[in-house]
Length: 186
Image 1 (cartoon, one colour):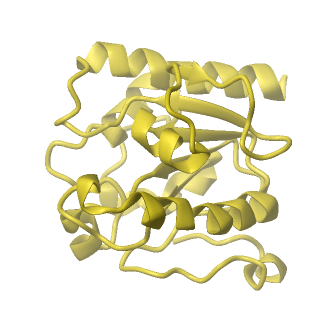
Image 2 (tube, rainbow, N blue to C red):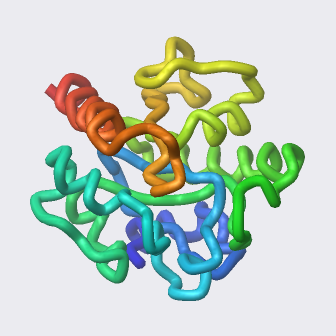
């Protein structure tokens, strides 16, 4: 996994679970999930679930120039992307996490954001954003009030194959991440 420059390492909270964050300085987008699934935790790579569409969504939206395998998650920073979770421990389902456990991940996320300064935080599911923000509802897309100064929050559909939205609809929102990065960095 890639970490920020050595001088920034000390400022980052250490990995707490089986799946290290994939980070780098000045990322265009940092994807924020609930927590690793059991397969991701066992393999040590983000979005490793058999039905997970994350890597395909990144490639098809143009966020990465090609389809990456989950074992290549360490390449994300070379494309200006990163990945982290609110909770480090792996579970079979996000439903296994308490609201308090999810909210407890917010200070760590704040430290990561302050250290690496991503342009966009892309929350992979409304539930992830609602848990982080403490809000009761949120639309898809760019949020009107970011959780952290200087960062744009975007809520995108979960890449899980269990998520009910059709692939094409998910792809629209991953494309919106790419468009927002282009708009903000123009």
